Image (cartoon, rainbow, N blue to C red):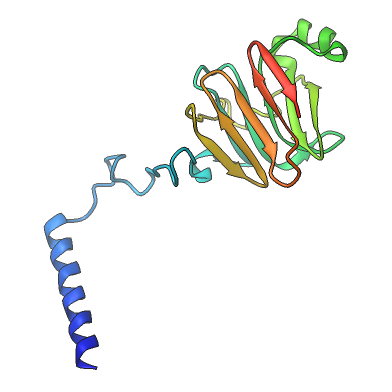
Length: 175
């Protein structure tokens, strides 16, 4: 019993000395603030950094492609994760839509992967500004989907069945 008490007292004293030496954290400095969350693993981001009112939103480093993993899937069939932005070439059934408005181009995955023609920001987030940049080489896991960003492209997939898409300004594909 004395050994345990001595260890506890020693640990408590050390913690007190560290607190006295280091002082309280400076919450005005983003590097020491509790809101500054580092990568949880190499290349894997903390989803909390990308959370918005109805999902998780991000954009590529070049800010040309915006993406979201929504709490509620959109459309039929139900697709929760998607990206939108100018891309090509357009699949034949999307040529008219994508050529009339480059921002109408979208790809999404949920029950399956597919191409979309959108007239609003389904995968940009509810805020006026698009989501936070997902750094190139980083991965976001949320709501059963995984998205990995590169400088100019994004690859997202359904964790359960592996269906997904890849989108870039000069290419796009479903799998």
